[in-house]
Image (cartoon, rainbow, N blue to C red; front, side, top):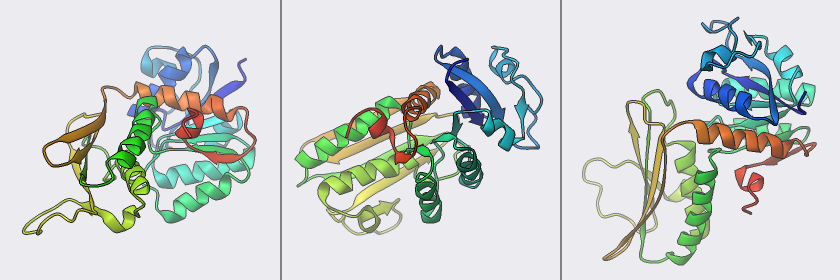
Length: 268
């Protein structure tokens, strides 16, 4: 059996199924458990059959037993569920990759506290491409730190429950930090009515929700006579799954600590 034994939370969902498929196709990983809610219609089904790859691992609602079987849990569910899974991981000494977004300050503090005992990768986006974009944004913002207005536009499917996306917020944080600003003080979330002229120190966010858009993000540096755009478009959830497995491999050599994808990819 491979040392990288993966448990997947929310295995019957859109992202969960992609994680199941990516894990089953990864020669260096083993699907150890597939977990979902007690009322999920996929309970008792072969997790692999959900993606055309029968594997003998049945979807279960027994989170404790599933996490105990794994060396790493990958979780793209919801904040309340992820925090419960986090405590189970902490109890069993299981690493966790958290792709869930929408945490409040208390949730983020709980993740940091758990990382004192277990290894955690917590990132707003697991895609390798998106994390390269974060690096490019930092470079661009340091160069275009005067005379440019920053606008961030993101689009996701109709089922996404938080806005702006965690990725868009992280993009804003990267730019704000490069400018020496606090995003909490300079962010503007949508505009309506007579708003007056745009304040040059602000960073604007626009959110689109519709259809089955997987995830589009675009950051515009708008100057006089020119506009520089840095963006990323995901056509499927596969990049998030592949990045998550890369994060799980990264954690396999760590005993504890809080990391993000910049650490995983060596971009710091």
